[in-house]
Length: 221
Ligand SMILES: C[S@@+](CC[C@H](N)C(=O)[O-])C[C@H]1O[C@@H](n2cnc3c(N)ncnc32)[C@H](O)[C@@H]1O
Image (tube, rainbow, N blue to C red; front, side, top):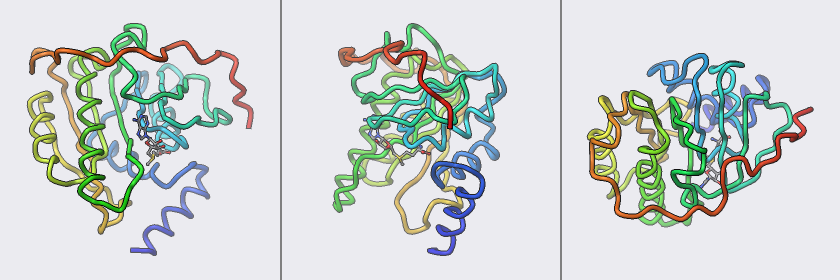
């Protein structure tokens, strides 16, 4: 399996991707067709930026990619239809993107692993649930999503929730993901909208918002 990891690591270097995780999104999108030219894409857990690179290439200059991460993402070399935000997903809410509805919400978010697989999986499922809670304000009806999750006790309930919210929802293990890893992706197509489940009673308060990043970030390599 080490050879597979080395293969994707080398390939990412050769092809100018910031991380080998690029090939997971490439495989997911080649198989399930989530991203189209002109789409608006919200990329959660985006640092260091390889999914952002892939999404930006796929949506093209008439699209938009918003990359969000706890860590700052280096804007150099990214096209101008990419916007970056340093934030915790859990601090974002309905107002964050000024009413923009995305065509796709993709997430490679992962909690820092602690060595306790049970706790890591629970934290990963909670991040996915936090994403799903926010979709009524962020994802257009008919839109698509994919989210990374560490499989564990709360995974079946998470999968069931995505099945209620989307026309089609399936677990997917990309070839570039280590076979021994509990990492999975749930790939969801055809968002049914907020009517598919009752609205949560409360949403987290806004701490940092859309437009907080200056427009004049230096993207030169
Ligand atoms: C596997 S990395 C993402 C790799 C990235 N997709 C790429 O291709 O370059 C997981 C990321 O999730 C981010 N993350 C974890 N919890 C988060 C949260 N609550 N809000 C935003 N980002 C989060 C981490 O900071 C980390 O950078």
